[in-house]
Length: 149
Image (cartoon, rainbow, N blue to C red):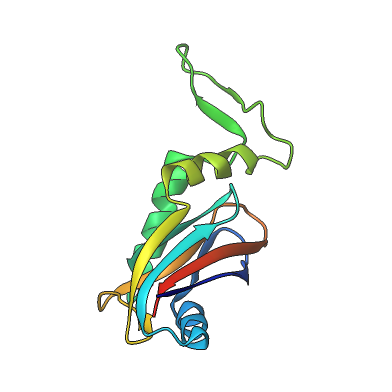
């Protein structure tokens, strides 16, 4: 049994999804592991990880539309008891700052996946995605911890 701990960096183009399958499988292949468990951690508080549909882009569009409706990025918080919305107190980096943190809290920052025959074990239609919650492009780091042989 061995383990490897590393980081990969990804550039997002702003709000939306970056598919990770190919980059993760290349990294796994570079380790020489054929069987194991890969633990991923997104090292940011305004982006998250998700496994979702990888064949029909409308699924990701619908997810983004749902998130936009639930957590608008206009800098205003939820309705108070009088039906009014007030600005978030945390808005140091703009209107999308606090909403991005809320979106991250509603999703996942970590996931653990099986590795079989030197590749991620995923269903036919599954893709692993980095979900950028900020409006502008960012450099995002993922921690990859692979345990196996």
